[in-house]
Length: 291
Length: 154
Ligand SMILES: Cc1cc2nc3c(=O)[nH]c(=O)nc-3n(C[C@H](O)[C@H](O)[C@H](O)COP(=O)(O)OP(=O)(O)OC[C@H]3O[C@@H](n4cnc5c(N)ncnc54)[C@H](O)[C@@H]3O)c2cc1C
Ligand code: FES
Ligand code: FES
Image 1 (tube, rainbow over the protein chains, first blue to last red):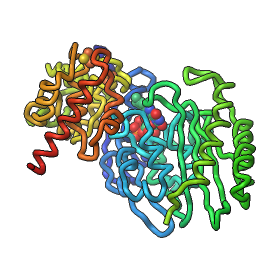
Image 2: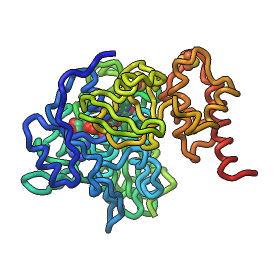
Image 3: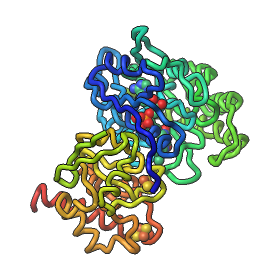
Image 4: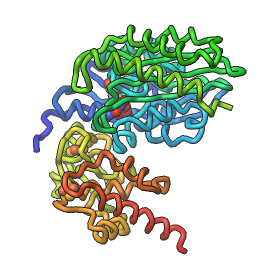
């Protein structure tokens, strides 16, 4: 067994303010569930001089419904999200994305903050949260701010956060009548990262979509929105099949995948079209809209 | 750092780097029931309970284990005897390498894990290259049934 060499300072702040302060030190890294950081440290890819563990900050573990939205504290675990009855009932895309991540042991400790702060393009939650039009709440020395997922994540494993900024919560809007759906495609083991992932939300009134959002993961340096999904607005049910197929082709054109063990770039691009169409059809046809 | 915890119900103190893995700490203290496999969180042979949650101890940092209530396979006869009995009676093992992780993972199942589909999803990250999983799933279902009976005797 290899021994860890060197020691990092390990800080356990009790408040967001103290965490921000601690993260101001050179080389400091925020630590939440540690599933990614533990892996990178174990592999020798990361040797932080200061680890700031967010696991003991009460403010960060609150999950509550407030007017028109759900505020999910940054250290809420993926297992808790997947099992939460209100999350499942109101935003099934998020519950399903959380339930899909890795394995039981990852979900037991990995957090929603890490699921967006890690910014790995293969992660499940970013496309779901992007389709749901979520906002990430951030606190830092310059104050508090709110960012959309595609503002927070600005590239491959990269975010716009300042080193001292902490994600405090993710806020998901709850809209009456909104449907949401998340699908991921893994040709290998169910525990694998998705080759491609697709998430959609749809507001449907009298059988006609009034708003549709589609987001794709796994097929570019970061999850991306497909603005062409808005073209489904006002389309009657009889034309959904052809209209969703067109949007799915737009989703594939916007893909910028790379060859890796999850599939070739060309394969991923084709799979984006397939899974974008499926998620849109599933979402538009979904029974359970948010009451 | 000085890590203070409870391991299998007893006080535990170790002087370790905060970035060492809980797996290294436990095995270094002679608790070698917990096995080392992939070291990347995939195989499950290193599964232990930290404050009742199943974790990959190969990824779990000692710093996060400070103050925690930790259970390993060595404590399962005390912490989850019905799970151990179920594995023995259903013969949920062959070579035994994956068994410590399987037993600890099953011990962490909540009452919501009821049928075969739930069990297979829950244990999908505990790999076994011997049994073909049949007897492990059987043992897990049996353990869950025993624990239901313990909560609500017939
Ligand atoms: C075996 C295995 C399988 C996996 N499979 C999947 C999968 O199928 N799908 C998937 O999506 N992911 C998968 N993952 C990755 C997993 O999603 C991430 O590791 C996890 O979501 C990160 O959450 P965490 O709390 O553990 O983050 P940590 O490891 O603690 O942190 C990850 C990153 O986020 C930053 N961070 C965390 N919280 C905050 C915060 N509040 N504010 C600012 N920055 C923060 C950290 O600084 C770090 O850069 C897998 C990981 C493993 C080990
Ligand atoms: S050794 Fe920890 S999961 Fe494989
Ligand atoms: S019994 Fe041999 S690996 Fe499972």
